[in-house]
Structure formats: C-alpha cells, structure tokens
Amino acid sequence: MKESAISVLSPPIPVEKRFLGRILKEIYEVKLAHDFPDRRFIVEFNDALVDGSLDDDQLTFWQI
Image 1 (tube, rainbow, N blue to C red):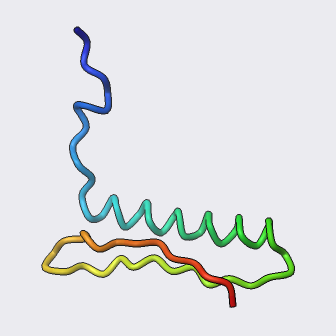
Image 2: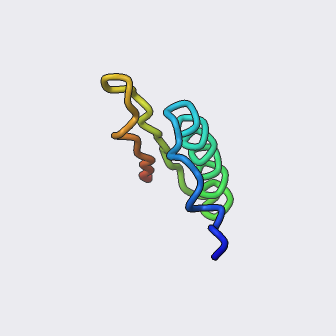
C-alpha cells in the first residue's frame, strides 16, 4: 500500500508555525475588512515562544 504524503510529513517547527500564523493573521485582516467594510476589527496572532516552544500559538480577532 502506498503511503500518503500527509503521513510522511514531520510536525512543523516553530519558525514554520510562526510564518504560517503571521500569514493567516494578514489573511484574516484582509478578509474581515472586505466582508465588513463598515466595521473595524483587531486581529492578533500570539507567537510568543515559551521555553523554545510555540505550543500556545493562537489567532484571535474581535470587533472594536
């Protein structure tokens, strides 16, 4: 049986997770501004390293 590409990928390293999180933050900012031009939002990506790990990364947005 042939292995799928997903099963052979290694878990992302913190640098990759940070990069992806920052790109997603920008995507959300643009998407929210496009979909709701009359509203303002704050979008944050928590990419603080804790003991060299990025386990608590999160993307949050809210309307102001």
